[in-house]
Length: 215
Image 1 (cartoon, one colour):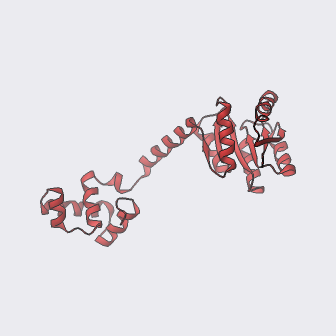
Image 2: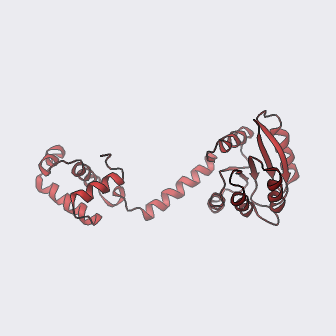
Image 3: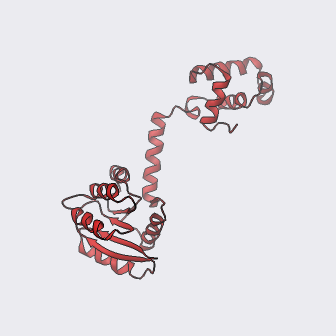
């Protein structure tokens, strides 16, 4: 069964080029085209496509708002953004609006076809350039806000925490890490102070939650 696609772009040559290329794909059918956001929404309402290839810079109603309207009204319709914009603010806004994929207009045609099939299979698609932006932003935000054991505790404290959570005694930990019992006790005290935790049971729950141990 073919993937029924609607093309939304305000440049005729862009739509014509995409249509000409996609007609050679046996599993993809271009069912309609629109040059602006409001027309796109009406078209989607009429033909109920499987997927919309959406530009962001559209007259009247931009691609982000059009995406939001389409997804809120037709939850089964997928939106794949094909844009010239690589700025993070556009990327995050369209995904918040409900888009399932994002790739840049300078991508190879083969990548577009892959993205169409990926999104149609209910998976998220990010072009490598976009994925790089998303991951870097995540890491930047994570470094600002992260209060997990991996950022609050030292490497040695994480070792001690894992062993405590796994039920090892102070003496056993000292032997395993080749440090004194007093040093283990100091680490345990520092761990509890940093995490504001006052019992081994709570430490164990914390370690499991943060992926420090699987117990």
